[in-house]
Image (cartoon, rainbow, N blue to C red; front, side):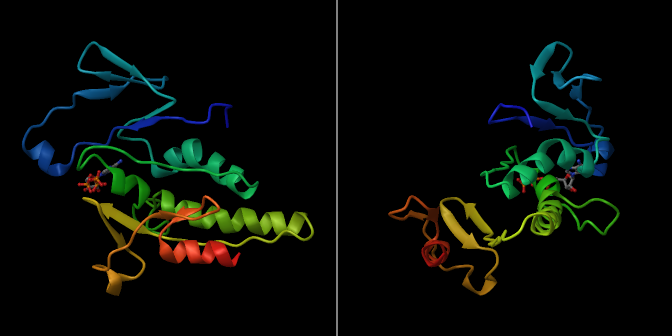
Length: 180
Ligand SMILES: Nc1ncnc2c1ncn2[C@@H]1O[C@H](COP(=O)(O)OP(=O)(O)OP(=O)(O)O)[C@@H](O)[C@H]1O
């Protein structure tokens, strides 16, 4: 991983069948062999990584996310933030299908697999290493938070808070932080 703390990757998804059907045209391309994206014929934008319609979930993960997971098990914080207009491919990239289903697995599946793999290696190679893995999966939609791991509390109001130690989370995760 380079020394830069924040990296930005652009991903261009393929046209969807219904877009092809409606004769939509491709208007944005990755400049071959570069991390630049050309909008129309003359507007060039540079990124740390640029992925085109044929680039796989694996390529996105290996270049952008795996190095972060490696840092994570060394004790660093890492965030992957996906941004884009509706239908641009955020869910596909982050959630995707399952890893087993023909390699379409998105970032979440791959991170989950690698976190345990790398922690296992760490435990094997160094004595006394202990790790706790906690997961929360919260949707923020129009100012409302929903706990996606507790579907029966879907309509329950959750609040993001900061505790006296500077931990940020909802009431439940903060309680867990206090227990650690
Ligand atoms: N790289 C890709 N390769 C193939 N299909 C893709 C790719 N990215 C997205 N798609 C398809 O494009 C459609 C829209 O993608 P997706 O649902 O991920 O968008 P989104 O940004 O999450 O939209 P929203 O903000 O509305 O939830 C889906 O049918 C998805 O399968």
